[in-house]
Image 1 (cartoon, one colour):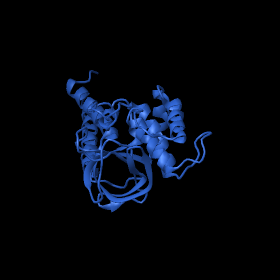
Image 2 (cartoon, rainbow, N blue to C red; image 1 turned 120 degrees about the horizontal axis):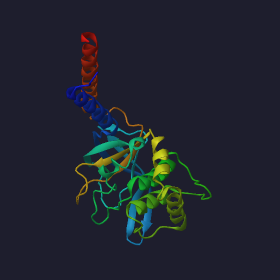
Image 3 (cartoon, one colour; image 1 turned 180 degrees about the horizontal axis):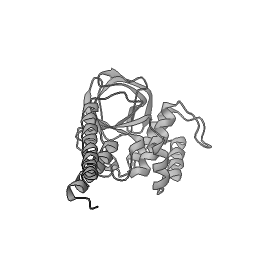
Image 4 (cartoon, rainbow, N blue to C red; image 1 turned 135 degrees about the horizontal axis):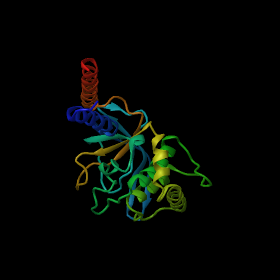
Length: 249
């Protein structure tokens, strides 16, 4: 029995839609409400660091939000659109959509790829969990975690890191630097972490890229539902055409 070109096309569409569903970015509205848990200082000034207070789709985030972006700035009361991407879905094919994934190569945008985002995710998870120890590094502060994160996304160019932050950067780079398979395996388990990339990204004057935990149903949920329904429709059409052929033979 030969499968017709139409059936092949239907099946291909089904596969494409299924793949698109898992990598689909969801649009949310992020707001910064002015609070931060600590301050990091270097020779150029003082910076709000640690966990920020913020909202997602108008609702205060219980866990807060964490900035991985030293290049851009936000002010109290500012809101912006962002694409929410689950950390566990990151792969070589979709990381370029993030602020430091490789598409935006101007000053301040390091191309950290999947391995770099695994490094940042390690430090973000430590901060959200209130951790003060990583391997043999002890007494870690949130200011040191923030400065280490910013140094990674700045391509190692951040000035003023203390010895603990410097050790943190070196430790996560040892864990994931050049180890794409290990990075993907680690990220796959982070279903609770979401990256909020401002849209449109990669331009001067944009808001910051943030991380949050346990994102609830975002505005993009409706778009996801449409995609799911389309996927089911294509799958159903493929099944019915095969069933009709079997009956008619």
